[in-house]
Length: 324
Image 1: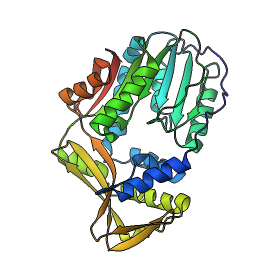
Image 2: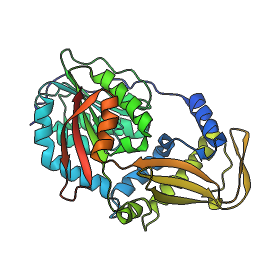
Image 3: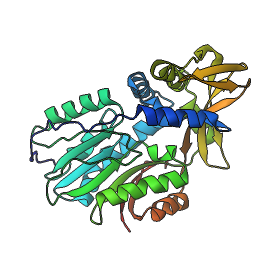
Image 4: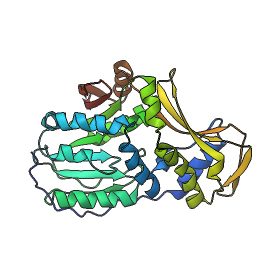
């Protein structure tokens, strides 16, 4: 059970501002063949709200399945973490899952939520500070897939990273290894990583999760183009694109695309981008792991798997990883 000790919350947010770099990344992606855009573009204010709606959909098993594991196993996870932990959450989102850990940790030293969505980060940090008034809350506004600076942490705190939601699946295997390697460097030799991982399963279950009958995932995907219109002066007509998601069995991944329904020219930051009818933009991959695949990725990053917890349907893992 959490003992609420440490410095009071209210630390200054770390700075994050990279519009030029993001614009260059967008233009590179749209110049590629096939075209692609980074999934971090999903999470503006509108996208963050839509994703919260997705997490409540009956077809979207991921959130409720991971929550069920955390609800059952949080005491065991906290025991492996030990005392005086600085919990660093990569992609804090709405911050629901982390409460299950904070409630069980013994004398936590700090909570560091890291997120690209400023509005959501501020709200989550303020809420955690209210709920745990003696816990040091030090939010960082950053793209956590890149290098960023951590705030000063209490001396002697064990650094434990928390990366839930199977977001690791959004990274190609080499990218996942590189990302986990950066986490390995951040937590150090005595640290650990709590990792959410989606497992392989029936294709019909996967298809329904990414093509929900309410159309929320489609709206989430199309909002990426709306964001480019708002922030980069793009000229996408959302009526001429549609959401597509399918399972690529050879790569063991769901792919989300935006398909152009007509031949057209769109401008992004003043740069003309041509689309053929039927041409797509790859907006997200979501890899589904089996045990050998997971072991290969984490071993290459300098971690070893100490424990994997799963649900009764064997659909999801929450793993406890330690430096190899």
